[in-house]
Length: 449
Ligand code: ZN
Image (cartoon, rainbow, N blue to C red; front, side):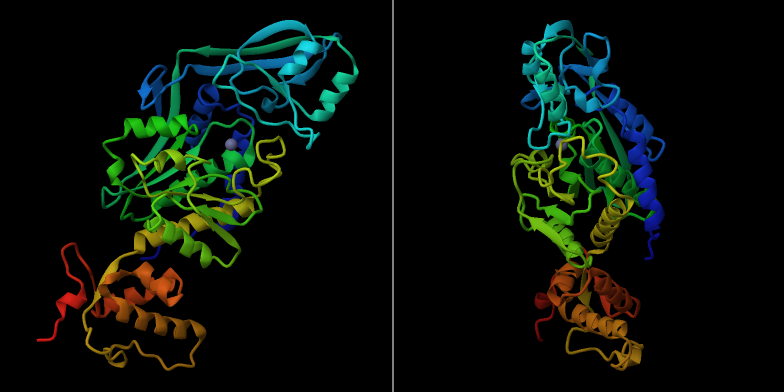
């Protein structure tokens, strides 16, 4: 089966321009920013928007009130905006309650957040769990204001916490089987490029590609606010989760770092083996790290009550780069080439998931004569032919109904693509048949008479 190829150069630029388009929106856990983001994504994929009302119980949690913000600033005595939400939405601590007061520096400074060790950057801060408010600013600006003495400032955050809903998006692409692959990405960060928009862009273009291919699995792509969004989705879809056979959390996919895969909790899950194999054969440095019950939404999907086979694909991991959760995670920090490279790896992962099957050698007693079937080519041909020849022998030898094609690729240190090609060749000449549910392995099938 030939799948549509990715035009990596074009698709990298398209993903980047999607990130540019969404960058200015002030997203948060709930509210207009998430909704606007999802509406814009509907221009790219058949995305359904779901609204879950405030107060809905979701396991040990509850859907919060909806937070929205229209404007915010700190003005000096001359009426000039010293800090302006319209310049950067990172200036306001996400979740801040409204305030409109004139106050002195001695009080204001307790509500300001900076990064003294990165004095030119604005940190990204949130406060969803108390009645707080605050601003984020470069430490150099903080120091300048501090030096100016105990002046009065006009402080305004035009925000609201009201009954509303939690908003998430879902794209469903049915396949031959009800068994599902779940792909998730978070949509809750304001103007941050790598930590949010890179995952959204790759998930969206992966969904576009998936929509064009014949699918063995059904694919579900969900765009959710981190943590509460995953908890909500799981709570609303408890009757469906047993259909999820594989999955990936997609995040941090646009920076120059090498690909990082964080395993799911189930060590032997196929997705762990598939991603490790794809990265090992991608021709670049990569990292595979153990499962950890923190970081992105894996900690919900892999909680013991679900224990879903969902890993996390990133480049530089969360917290593993100095731009993380700062104003330096901007559109200059991500690049079309890295987005495209991440998408290409996702496509390879899907190809292995789709193509990984188990076969039974129809001529298991000694090697079949390959020559008379046109399968034997003299050694000394190009390297490709030699590798295919060897792949054919590996597939014949290990296809006893116990080893999948991925097992064979790993054991023979071949790429999955080579093993899949060898299997296709052997199927077409009748030497291999797919093992069907209920088929026994060869060992028990072929006891000598
Ligand atoms: Zn984050």
